[in-house]
Image 1 (cartoon, rainbow, N blue to C red):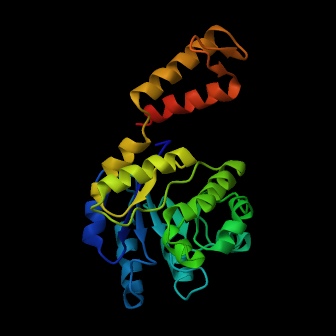
Image 2: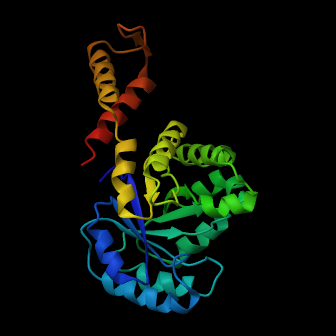
Image 3: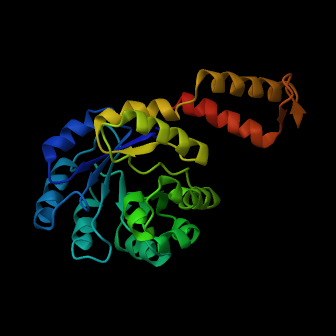
Length: 270
């Protein structure tokens, strides 16, 4: 799948919930060994995850490993990175490019994805995004960043959000997904938040409950109006190469055509 829109996080120490998550309709399931697992259950969570992912899975499954400077991450990487069912490793609280390089050199196997969750990480966003060829994406961890910055109003995170999006695109990485909406019952708020995230340049979103998945997908898939406009642009560009204007007065050039092609590709992502 070229354009994952939903990334469903599940705790690694609850294998029955992981099994349900694999059938919930998410594009990517992320098994969390870090924040969602208590310290005394870390080893059990790793063993349970390894048992589940020893075989290939029907959809991409990523694992968020434990803190990069903590006592569990080396065993996480050694145990899980070689497994056929692991499609990606998500690195928490990355603050420097050197951390990415160190992890990349420790493991062989699936791609790495860095989570930026502190003010220092935001300052180093582009350096992290370009740290190593094994890094295939970056994303924002808003709960930790909010605490680090002392931000209370949601709008206070918009500069950091834009910084991460720009860093990803400047590094040639896919647009990052939005961070989670923590209130799993507030679907109207999730819809509004996704609409705002889309205007900033995010693509898709992390979720922590299956009920959030259809809301996220609807928010990020192109609307009928957007598809019609994209098709108009492609037809015009096919008929006449170069910069030109549409009948409604819209100016189009190569960049506009490329954006229209991305819109159509997103609609055909399945």
